[in-house]
Image 1 (cartoon, rainbow, N blue to C red):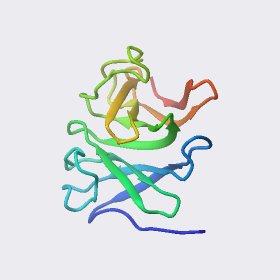
Image 2 (cartoon, rainbow, N blue to C red):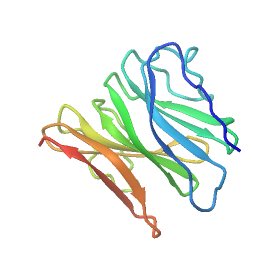
Image 3 (cartoon, rainbow, N blue to C red):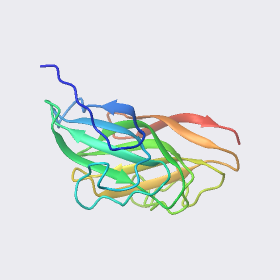
Length: 170
């Protein structure tokens, strides 16, 4: 049955992407976006989430099929502005694509040892962040040149290959 919800804190929170798995883990809904809240007391998250800063941070929420929050996480890396543009279910977890000005992303790669870029190159770079089913941070990679970049779309094919799209000024 249809449902709706309001979620966020006392500052600017914007959802930019929504995804639902098409196989395996039915009943999950993922929402990704950006928050500018300055404390965990104002943006409700699951235990173990990073503290928020005064800049924009990426958030990801997992809801069940009736809109109940199962998990929520803010991915706050450093003091740079981070922005989520796309989300996709990936195995039992989720991948978020976007843009970051942070310089301390854990770059494990989407698969172990496959980070496209282990450090940022421009003012802002595209970013992919992976979280497992418990919303533990598992993967990450930058991508971009000396200009500005963003990942604005992400998909996973039937062989679990990740495909991204976006823009670049490099």
